Amino acid sequence: MRHSTLFSLMAVAISVAGAASNVDPFEQWHKPEAGHVRGPCPFLNTFANHGFLPRTGKYITKQNLADGLFKSVNFDANISAFLFDFAASTNPEPNSTWFSLDHLTRHNVLEHDASLSRVDAFHGHADLFNEAAFAETLSYYGDTVDVKGGAAAIVARMKSCKATNPTYSLSDLGEAFIIGETAAFISILGDAESITAPKKLVEYLFRNERLPTELGWKRPESAFTTELLLHNLETVEAEYRKQLNATSQARKRSGGFADRLLFARQGLTA
Ligand code: HEM
Ligand SMILES: [Mg+2]
Image (cartoon, rainbow, N blue to C red; front, side, top):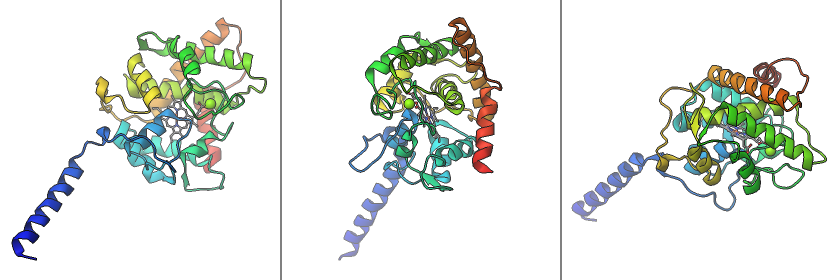
């Protein structure tokens, strides 16, 4: 091969490699392919669809999770480690160092009844988006999803799932997760300080399992931490308890949900 041809081939290779490294990962959204797995968490599914987590949805390690959650939504390493221990507990293999997104679907490990966008396991796939369930949720949100609307949707979903599912149940951990999920998604899609998020961003992410950059969402500038998650969870919990009392369905349990999560996590790492 002549030198000039070799040089031009090398130049093309270098420019292709350069272009690939300049590609904005937020724009690299692809539907899962055959053989890929997804689960009941709209956010983790989203991160896999963007390639922030392995696109296969399989064999996600602590490091994969830390990198992925940092690059996508600015989670610090501690909160990723905190969440990883819960995630790994769903792998049927004990003491596993990885999990796959479909492990999260195992009913009543973390996956629970009364989801915002999924039917109860009794009724069908607890990991697939369900229009009717989500429509009920959305009907409790104003144009801005806030703590009040977030708690009202949870209480409503619990009430209707209880009424239609003879096997309905919710563990202490499931209840703490429900509140944590709402606290987390509002904080990440909107403002973690005021705990508000535009409903259109929430709707977009849940429906498309895609980060709503085309609607103007940007990766949060400040890091999201375990402390912030637990703080916002406590705010949503207080509103949730208030609304449960108002609808006279109060559950008499001791201890806050933040403590429940911390305690449960201790058990996982003991
Ligand atoms: C390793 C990290 C994570 C794990 C292990 C995890 C796990 C789960 C699981 C098991 C569910 C199913 C619960 C159900 O039955 O509804 C779920 C749902 C959910 N997750 Fe995640 N998740 C993680 C990260 C996140 C993040 C970062 C966010 C948001 C910022 C998030 C937001 C949600 C929301 C809003 C739901 C509720 C979906 C619904 O009720 O329809 N999750 N997650
Ligand atoms: Mg569920």
